[in-house]
Length: 165
Image (cartoon, rainbow, N blue to C red):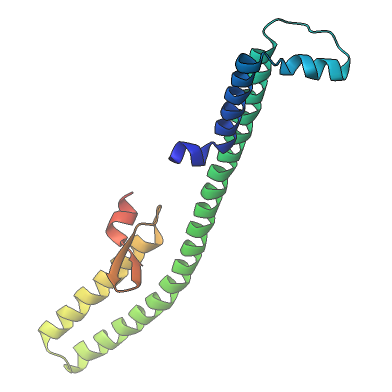
């Protein structure tokens, strides 16, 4: 079924050739001779129905292949543009979150000096800041977009699979 959707002109011209050939065999109807008479040219080959069928098939295949190539090029262009928009957005998000993380580091340094936080809370704060920074770096370097569901109607980029592709 997908062949018929991908190559409708090829299938259509094959059907036209089969119908034409069937009519020729059943009614001894020479379609090429009629065309030639209309154009007032003499018949130039004996296998005129086969030649005409091959011309139709060639046209159908050419149209289908051209359309398919155009769809492939369009899909590739859309994917490149989508990735470019994602990267631009991620650079902006990276800048904003990095500014936040730098501010958090200042708070951490101040908390260490003043003793406002327990040492285990300070180390947890370090881990969270490092993990967040690492995830942002991975997301900024995504080459292909692989999404995953995180809830009903919610999709996110799978950072680990996307940055490894």
